[in-house]
Amino acid sequence: MRLFRYIPKGDCCDVKQQTDYKIELEKRNQHIYLKHLEGRANGQLANIYHLSEASIRRIISKEKVRYQKMKEIIEQILPLWGIENRQLLQIYPSAWEIDHSYVIKVYEDKTQLERNIKISEILLDCAIPVAKTVLTKTGEKFAAYKNIYFLMSQKLQGSNISDMKDENVAWKMGCAIARLHTAFMKCEREIEFWDNSLLKEMKGWIRENLTDNEWKILSEEEYSKTVEWLESVYDFLPKQLIHRDVHFGNFLFLEGNFSGYIDFDLTQRNIRIFDICYFLTGLLAEETEDAFTKIEWIECAKSVIAGYESIIHLSEKEKEAIPCVMECIEILFVAFFIGMNDMKHTNDAYHVFRFVQNCESDIKNAI
Image (spheres, helix red, strand yellow):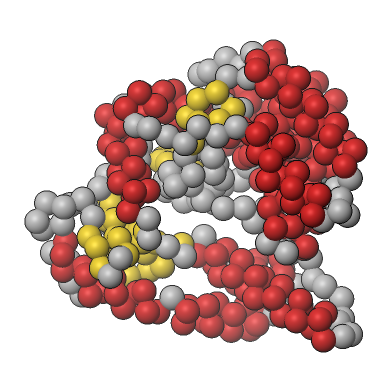
């Protein structure tokens, strides 16, 4: 998951602009609903999106209707686990909470579901706090309904909303990423994973999308400079299994302490520091009324990396490459959103790229 700060558009004049604006509004409404599921209050959402609280309530109500059918299916299959007449609360577009005790997640890809179950089992053996699968009454690890698959697990305690401007929380987040990386080494020995290369992505579909866009957002010179930098250090950067989607929606905290990991859908082998870089650049893209200043973000990065290094030592090559990998991640998002014809988020990703580019020396000095 990757969310970007919403910036209201100006008035539209012609038909095409009106159509584009309608699409942007639909995407905005989806983001508002997701933030609502993550626990944002209507007042906070109103401030972030420059809307009235009444408008926020209407948007959330409309989005809830879209997911009602899936909720009805889940209610029908709950007896497979011996559960009936329970309170269902949607906490994510593909996940529902049951009586504050269980979470049921919806999958369309059976292979991905089975792999995620295996990952959780291995991590539990390593004493890593992940959700434990709840078996059906017949002892199955998941249930199927019309080519849709449902996994029930025990609910982990904790929240996905924390104060990242608290240096202690940032340090704990770095520790949490490192502990997961340590446990992932065992997963690599027991499960086959997609072996991805950030460098190949940069030279492949990312370059193609930017070329198709005629380098209108990000210049070819900016792209080439960053890719050449990555290529010069790539062979020196350790690769291993990573989470690939590190953000506060997937790393939980309870009373200021880390409490558990969720969502291994994007897990893959890649550059080890990718997870750290993804998390830190994601903070710059978060939709929040309390955005980071440059100094605050640099201090946060320093604390996250210090926490990580309290468990796993980063080489000097890795530390030097952190700004480069951050810039590559933002170029990746520029290319991704170009491919989606989503120019608002394309521009947002480019702005984060330029921010990191301007902070290169500050990042290196801090770590």
